Image 1 (cartoon, rainbow, N blue to C red):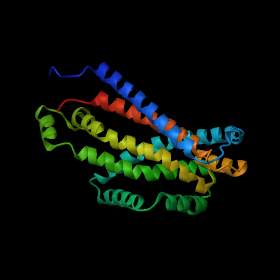
Image 2: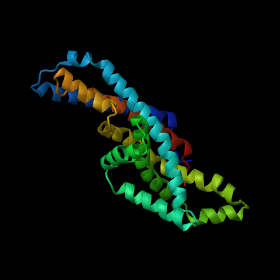
Image 3: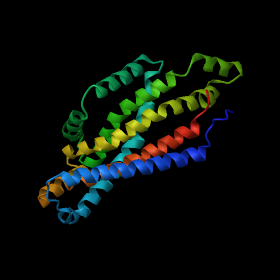
Length: 256
């Protein structure tokens, strides 16, 4: 091992210290910006609608959690479908990914809820929202998974066969661990995007946190007060997800 290697615990403490310094600097910059704004803040009006915003935030967490699980399952299914030996399955999976990735989420939500769900007599807006959001994000995740899987070199597969691994052992011990490590950054980023994309569900009458803030601003006759806590609430969901993904990356990291 090199003499310049850094102790992991010391490196973690260093990162925490730098994060603390940057947080203080960001707070000072934010305070300076707010001090120059000529706007009469009415935080008391926002406080009166705290339960409405809290309910919207809980709804956002519920929708995001359900869509996260479903989108990962769908992404894996589409990834395997694109590698299927059956041509119809492969063409369907590829066509689905291209169509979903090539059209806006807003259009998919409107068509999915007001046309498809209405034709199927499904009146559960939250359920439809979770499915539509997962269908959109699953197409992107499938490409992340496919890219990670196909990035494994042929030499790895040949080495696994040389030591006597069968197909299941080869995927379990050689391909999947490496593909998982390579897919983690993109997957974490897409999950963060999923949480933020849930703000569009207000177009199908779901009162998630963004819609709750808009209603609060309209009812309390305020303009900016609601959007600052909104940013903090989204950060409260995305930052732990990013931290967890980095921990997983460190756990599965290996020297090359």
